Image (cartoon, rainbow, N blue to C red):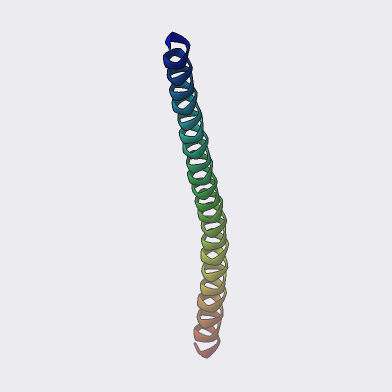
Length: 78
């Protein structure tokens, strides 16, 4: 009878350890998914910032070219 109680206790402890290991695996997968999502967001933000920088530089160059041409036209009329 004593062995049966010890066996039951061992089985219950094994089930608790298995459940704890399963919870740890689920938590690790959740952490890795969040890490991957954050990394993707940061990478996308970095690419968007580079795009915005290039776009603003090109717009500034076009504005400079346009203002230079309009100044040349004004000087041509005087």
